[in-house]
Image 1 (cartoon, helix red, strand yellow):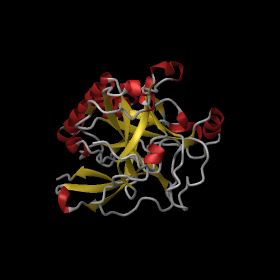
Image 2: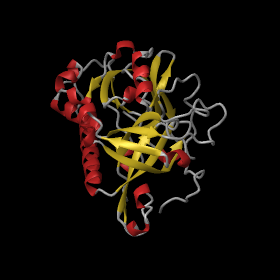
Image 3: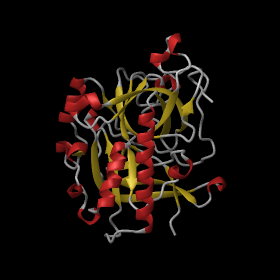
Image 4: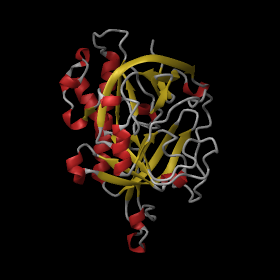
Amino acid sequence: MLYTDKESMMPTDKGTKMRGTKGSLNYEVTYRNKEAQENSASSCTKNPGHEGFIFAENFSIESLPESFRTPKMYELCRCLINLTCMIEVFATSKNRSASDNFKDQLGARIGSGSVYIPLKYTHKGGHCPCPECKDPKNAGREFYEVYVTTAHHVVFDNYEARRTYVKLHFDREDKKESTVTLPGYRIVNYNAEADRTILSCITHDIRIVKEIQKQRDSAKEFEEYFCSHPLETNPSYNLTVIVGHPHRWPKTISFGSCVQVQSINSDESNKGTVWTEYKYNAPTCPGSSGALVWIYGKKRVGYRDSDITTHTHCGSEDGMNKSGLGLEFKTP
């Protein structure tokens, strides 16, 4: 069922009680126009020189940390790359609180996210809500929803969702024609304390839907493989992988180690799981907010129920990069 047109109405994740993630957090969004983008990169104090970022087009098995250089790990990272998107938000909601960092921001902002397909993704009949289908002659056109997991501070509510565009396959600056742009439609679910939003986008192309599902299924298989067949690595090095669009660049991947984890027991409805929040040293920059944070050896609940409760990058705190809260299965 499609949600109401009342833009202030959003479905919330009310069942989770947890500590907020904001505090002194430095959010990592960037801005859309080219001059601001170039200034953001050249004057960047977060990661001067931008060492550690590997552009997706240059990523190879040799790019992996040495003890993780296996074909399966390479293929898993390729899946994560293919599921990553850039998010352009062209408005700021008046519903943001007065203390919100973006309350009075003018202009568009850029974040990152990862895509997946809901269990029921086909809508037959009815009127497609995307901008190109406002013309009555397109009524009844079949359309599909693509879900995007990102940070709540990137896309706040339905007002912002409908003024958002999601770009898939922006992997090379010289091949922008291969980029696919999907219009935002609605907020499916959000949790402000976890700094997580699930945004719905619209497509008419079933090939996009099938390819996303294929990549997601493959990522699930590789993740389950590594949970049951751990590599012989330094146990203190918890590989952290982040794929995003720092500084509005084409897609990059970066690697580091998880340096701190905070666990919060789940509620009774999610037995055998735990809410966790990670800090890590994998490089990030403005534009990385909302990017998927993948931790080696962790099995995410989102693959079980198609309700992504994975960790998204939300910024930095106390000199370390930080995720929002995500739900994962407890390890023995």
